[in-house]
Image (cartoon, rainbow, N blue to C red; front, side, top):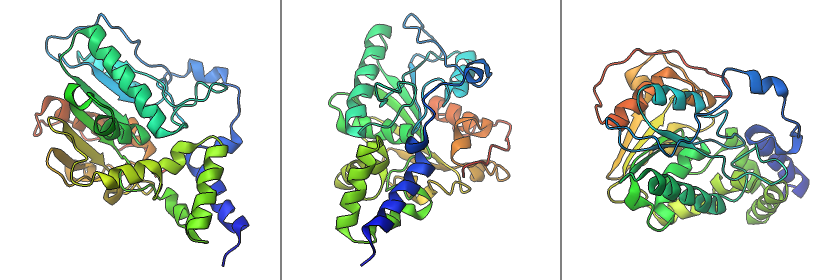
Length: 299
């Protein structure tokens, strides 16, 4: 039987690839605040749009926050007349700018409260959700698990979500070197190191198990789910993301823009993806837009 130390090395590899929890620089670089890619649209609860009545709520990915993930898409949608809102969820108290690390079941409650707040304060009948990576998982998971949320969600758009178990470039397999014993040890280690969400999305994690238990009814009645995926995404491959259920549209970027080899992280900043997002929000699925060649880093 492989040693426990070998299995724990697998845990460390997962952390290094997904959240860098064990190597965090706890100071926020001042240069980042000056970067044009930094900064989200302010949450303006007085915003109303006759052309786009649903407020759009953006959900960032693992170890990110509202200021750096989907924020540029948020500005793009704002310029197009949408009312855009976002939050940083799942952050630890000592590092409030690093989100998406806590238990996703806990974060789901946090997100549900924010969705309710946006709907209540804006007076909207419905809201739309757009999430990237872990945020994409949340765009599907929160309506599935949180009472009353599915009823107030219209569109839930997920960019590269790990619905069927995150593989972390294959390192998830290392967690099973010693069977269920090492998998349980890995789960404990990830939680102790501060990234319960890393474990939640992996095979046999809490969120993975919740989706598995709800197979065939992941998409809630009345929700219009759009899963946007890239064939060039090697962190979360399309087969890990797609949902073959009524109410879900599975969209491969390269079917529309064959030359766009965007990777996983780049989904948030890719203008091809932005075009597809607008098509899903407006349900004008055949609308033409200019294809881009997105960022391929961290495929």
